[in-house]
Amino acid sequence: MKNKTRLIFAVITVLTIMTGLFVRIKKVWFPDVVNLYLGDALYAFMMYYIISFLFVKKNIIFRGLLALTVCYTIELSQLYQADWINMVRQTLPGKLVLGSGFLYTDLLAYLLGVLFALCVDYFLIYKHKTLYVSRLK
Image (cartoon, rainbow, N blue to C red; front, side, top):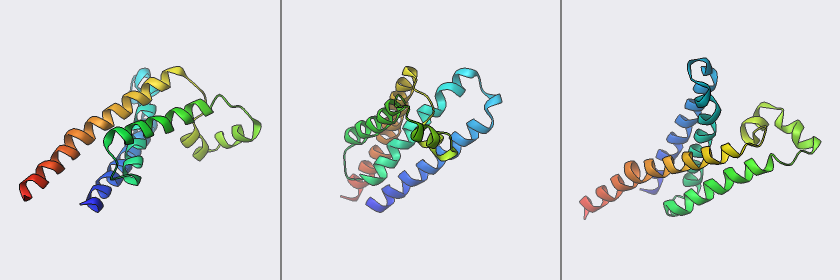
């Protein structure tokens, strides 16, 4: 069951990345508010499922708090403006992983992304899994 759960988390992570890239490529289709905050919310959503993949046996609260901590740490690291890290941030991988500029509103987007991931995990994965296990008994 643990490997099946990990596979679900990996698939969700890949689908989230694809969704984020799609939204970025087709940004003219979306209003400015979506373009401004959806990427950060999806990043946090993805981070939750990466953490869940790595810590599959931990409870959802631990995974949610860890994902939020990672996102907040990366966002706060954008306040650090040394030349070497700014050069890293100018590359595509650096920009995707580290971001490019600190915004307080990004912290809210991360919180909403992790909360949505927690809801998806709890209502679509966890509840289904416990229902399946209870049927086996």
